[in-house]
Length: 300
Image (tube, rainbow, N blue to C red; front, top):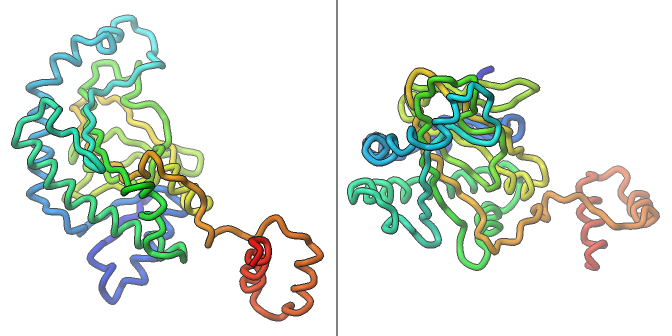
């Protein structure tokens, strides 16, 4: 299956319609896609990956292989309640915890610079999704903001080389709880899979610093089911460790999530009222009738 690839350089050019249609199709029928020519500094992306891998080797690798999860492979039984991963989480917005973590100053500074650029891309994506849905361009940002602003955090994960990958998942099957997820992933080691049309689709490593994007549960709710959150997993791999830097553009904790009113069909009305309107507008656009019924149901 060919995974949709959005060329972001076309969004502002003469081929904008083509790029927007592909983005809409990817959000509606896949729940995942790749972005190229996204404008994120590629040297910065390479530096983030290098420094995270260095941090893993120096601070996480030994501890992981001494863990109960790693030792449990010796039982030669499938491990259903654990994941073959080692992680740390960085909060960026509304408050950062990066200075509370045991990261090098170079990694902290580089991560902050990368996230500053990534947030702008997430905001741009949210506006384009709103445009495709036919709702106000800031609907996702406002819906996610709560009392302040959307929440942004990054899960940094390493899926270490696994001697018995048949006994454990790298990460068990799940959908993401939040909104828009932007993944900077390994450029060599595979393992990520998404469920589509009854089968698991293998997501290849990201060439040329493409970003992999998927949509979460809250975007499915806000879009009234138009855009889907997709089930996915990570397989443990025997040859090589896989890097995953997933940044979540999510609702604030106090955000009240509901479908955009513009996407809701009219509801809670008497059928006779609809028939009365229908007899007057039978040969007019039905969308106008729906909008009139929504206004009537809301007492307008």
